[in-house]
Amino acid sequence: MTTSLSISGHLVIAPVLVPFVAGVLLLMLRDQSLTLQRGLAVLVGLIQIGFALALLIAVADDTLLTYRLGDWPAPWGIVLVADRLAAWMVLITSLLALCAVIYAGGGTDRQGRHFHVLFQMQLFGLAGAFLTGDLFNLFVFFEILLIASYGLALHGGGPARTRAGLHYVVMNLLGSTVFLFAAGLIYSAMGSLNLADLAAKAASLPLDNLGLARAGGLLLLLVFGLKAALLPLHLWLPNAYAGTSAPVAALFAVMTKMGIYAILRTHTLLFGSAAGDLAGLFEPWLMPLALATLVVGMLGALAAETMGRLAAYLVLASVGTLLAAIALGTNGIAAGLYYLPHSTFAAALMFLLSDAIKRRRTASGDSFTPDADMPHYALWGGVFFVAAVAATGLPPLSGFVGKFLILQAAPGHPWVWAILLISALGIVVALARAGSHVFFNSVTASSAMPQVPGQRASLFAPYEFFAIGGLLGLILALTLGAGSAVDFARATALQLADPSVYINAVLGSTR
Image (tube, rainbow, N blue to C red; front, top):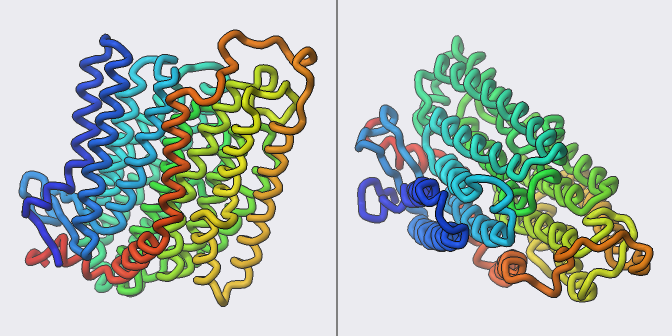
């Protein structure tokens, strides 16, 4: 079933317009009270979640919603498309963003100018990238979210943050250049950049144009692999994520998922089983690179010397896990789509938790060196334990369900079983080591470095309670609602396995 210009079809553009309008309004209010800006940012976050939920409900019965900007029909005009996958990603991003912006209200947003404007512009780019039905406009939305992320990554300044942020900027600028080359090659070979039109033309592509299309497709994998931090294009991630502020790093936990989304979309739509000679273009590369990324993430976590850097390598490990799931086919994609929000929320939780602990350890911050016992260390140790269980995928939380489903989808892949289980064990060791150093390897207060006034907060600050508690609540909800979430993920994977549904929804009678 498809819908084009019905009332419900206008839901598609709402998640794109809301952060854009909010960003413009916040720019106009830049000289007003920061409290007003924070309140508006939280209100916008709640509105965005409402639209994301409405969009998810609208597509839950396999309806595909399309929105033609200017009422120009595809493939000539710009079109936004909402299917199960796009709506799922928009909802995950909206929930994460609300927790991150609440935490930023603790003081991060006053460390530099235009934090909330940049934050909303990044959400604008993310929503547009998830919902666009055009390859060139995917590039445009990539640039919007990346430009905003450059400002957020460097927000607050400092030599270490600037150095890590510049590496991030340079790598992504190179990726953007390659993206243009990829789009040019694909347009030369197929005469279109509309995703549905490209999928429709792939099966009947002339042999003379096959080489150009393959080259363009592999360049797309290179670009999306860079965005996802797929090995060997991952070197920018640990420094960039560990070097920026905690709420920004928490939001960045979904940035790598943007790359994974783009790989999944093109892998199933442009290069799926119905793509003729282009079918399975990514398959020889995905599994080995995914498993290698997972191993590097595990080794990086074991070698990490701070909680922030440990959280960054956990993001890298989740990238490897998710791409390995995608490489397993429809059942693996379903498992990965359930595991994706869990890994995003768990990584964001670790970033926020590392910052909260850093504020309370006056001598060592979040590094694994001895310090005086932090206030209410038993409570914070308990929160860290729950976060560690979530990050490692141990029972009974949703990470265990997700990894179990991935292993269940890989009966004939012993290497997947071996590396997933060994990496899980390595991450358990890394987190156990981190917890031991931070909460048990203490020194007397007199031998610690002098305390910084106001740094040792007691119990939970309100922004910590709502942000960290919100992420814990989302993981718990994903665990308790595992049955419904897994059913949705399986239906989404089946929808992705049939590109004709997407093609007919977008092109309709213009084919």
